[in-house]
Length: 219
Image (cartoon, rainbow, N blue to C red; front, side, top):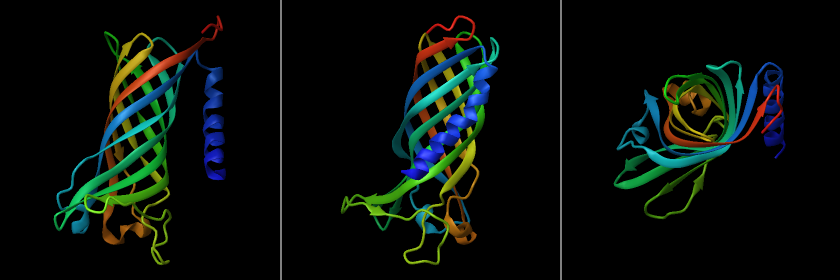
């Protein structure tokens, strides 16, 4: 709990200076259906046999600081599912990773209600587990970077990558397609020669429920 509280405090501290320089501030709730997998290089067979996308979800809060009619800066903090599925000896294995994810993106308005977003994201791993289509039980992994203790860590604490989005505005709602590309190896101990990165596509709905105009202070 202490880690989560400190992360939230850091996020609020990070965004606070921008409220002084923005014209309008929008606060929103978002929810997404995502389909995630991994990008693996020099990996063993467990990552490559029948590797496929894993359905999941995410939800959270978004803050948009408008600087002019075209550009704004968007922060969000959300709880998200990452993972992948594989086939091992005819058994379908699903690997789930739960993250607290913080993207920071530039928002640029295009035409006819469309907008484009791009920027880095930071992920903090919360838990990892796998299931299969035989036993249905969950087998939990360990988060850290020590592969020599018993049992060894299976997922790094931090993730980093790039997130882009194409959105369409409908009054207080934004509907969009989001692409998230990890650039860090998520396997502890450097992956022992292999590199495994997160990859996710999302269909997202954002409800902008609160807007403050700096001059008028209206909702």
